[in-house]
Length: 241
Image 1 (cartoon, rainbow, N blue to C red):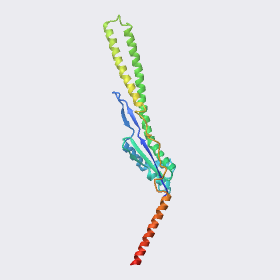
Image 2: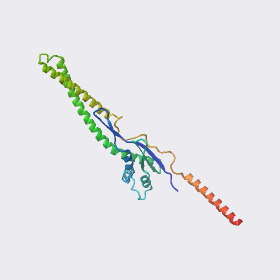
Image 3: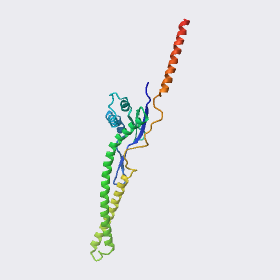
């Protein structure tokens, strides 16, 4: 008789990072290809690490729970290009949930490292752009004030032209740097950059995915009745012959 099993599932959205471009539109990069992520989960080494993280013995060492967890843990790509569903079975709902949670942590931990490295670089670029913007804005305001206050009024005409050109260049530089700052901020926003996450909490049905003990008993009774009826018919047929 096969003991009842429960199958837990969780749908995972693979994280992404946004890289700021000169045109202000961030380029979105998925932390890992959907099919690659699913295949990585399905590899024996990944499933073995999940088993170890749960404190279970290695498969094929006499533990039915470990064997079932190892054999049933699977990942499948969904229609959306950034979604992967993890599923695993165990002999209780709680254990099935623990397995898929451990698998999710194993998948998301690798992605978290990539996410943090990428966002750290973008944050550094944002800080640098903000410093440059602050310096350029100060120069622009000083040059503009000097031109307006008439400090160059008694100077040669060429000097006035030079200051005016400097103001124009600084104005363009400030505008470009402001666009860079906005682009980096947009790239770091949670809408554009986010780590791998579960779409919803892991789910396991109340009823087991395999027939219950009662169903097996009823099935045995029915099979027994059918066999008895067959023997009775065969016996009657032999007597009639």
